[in-house]
Structures are given as C-alpha cells and as structure tokens.
Length: 120
Image: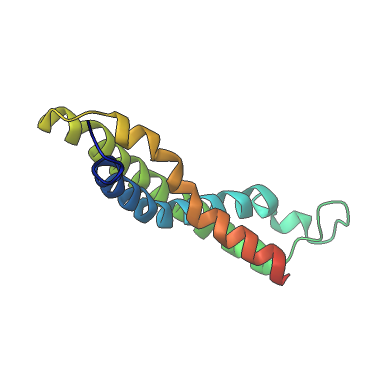
C-alpha cells in the first residue's frame, strides 16, 4: 500500500514543472488579452471615438504584442509536448501525474490577475 508521502512524491515534480511552464503561459495570456483589447487599432482609428480611443502607443505596440504572443505560445506548446507527451512515452511512465497537474500552468496568471484586481 502506498503512503500519502510516496503518492505526493510522484505528483510533486510534474506540479513544479507545470508551475514553471506557467510563467511563460502567463505572458501568453497577458499578450492575448492586450491584443484582443487593442490589436484592432490602426492609424485611421485615432480620430474615432467609438473605438476605445486608440493611442499611438497602442498602435505601435500591437505588432510587438502579436509577435510575443506567437513566440511564447509556441514555446509553451513545445514545452508541454516535450514534458507531457514525449518524455512519458520514452520512459514508459504513467501520464496520470502530468495530466492531473496540468491546470497548474494557469496558477501564475491567476496569482497575477488576483494581485492586479486587489491593487487596481
């Protein structure tokens, strides 16, 4: 019979890895939120009052936000495929600890969003 400590020992490394993968995932979510909000802004929208009062900074930064979104999303997808897909197949270990701790990649963003809501 497995003790609670031995069970936790099996789930702790995947949890820590998913928390670390959560850091670039938070960047992906933040870039996606920014791009959804301000990515529509173009120079023709500067004078219009019905498009969230677009500014020059929002127009100039939309390309950077889109590039960061694509690069970090590809990086996170690569990390997840390597850690959650290929590594267990190669070592013959169970997928269960990795799949059960997968939602932990959203914890760094949740902490940031909670902090921002309380401060702002």
